[in-house]
Image (cartoon, rainbow, N blue to C red):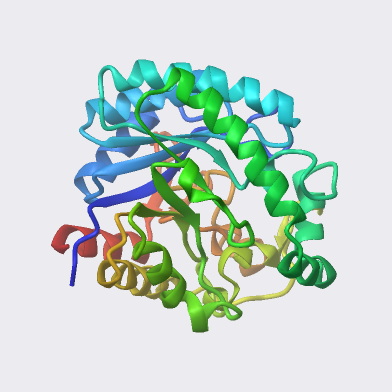
Length: 341
């Protein structure tokens, strides 16, 4: 079995799907503690840092670098226009170049699934609207036979890469959605957000092999699973069992919590990446601060998130403790795998 050179995890510094709001930005103390755990307990050598607030992204990057982690900087300005996104890329590229002066191996992920994150590629005013369009069977069929979306996206990525390279001189990649057909000649590294599910399971290894067999390095920038029976069949859609529109978000029906589903899924995919010469792998995600555990299964939002950490409500542990969370089974299994491989 080959070794994955870059062993990483995603880390959210405050992601908002409805800008300009940001949510649950970690303070410097929490970031420092998290980076130490990611490096020393999880045995990662890299972290993909994502979020919208550039100042917080840079703060987290400095802390990660100081803790000995390689940074893959991944700004996300969700639901901005194409023009706003280009301006944001310029700002982020300049900031990333300053980081590169203290950490030459930094990688800049200039965008994430632009067909969803940026207005104009897929019908819908918000990212939620565009996700609904994306999941529509008629869109799926149309997208399979039409090159309109892919041509428009690649044309835009040419502009994005051009402005990014004017300011950032290191390696650049892009975190692509499974439905996006990207011209990877534009980038230094191929980047895939690639979750296995009931529909693509039969071809998952084959797809990884197709990309890892190219001259350019392959990074799986996102992969993950939730912690309930059947979550491995849903892949990236594992969160969909929650009704987030309710005054108190809750599961749409009762599911059985099972942390082994998540851990088995992650280890299985990591073994595939090792055997198929994947350069970098970033688990999604270290912690989802909004998805809090509850003893009542109806309100156990942790069951439906991708974190390696279970976030606890106040009172389960000492309410004065700075970090109210526990390591899940997946944390232990990933730690063992990364430590031995």
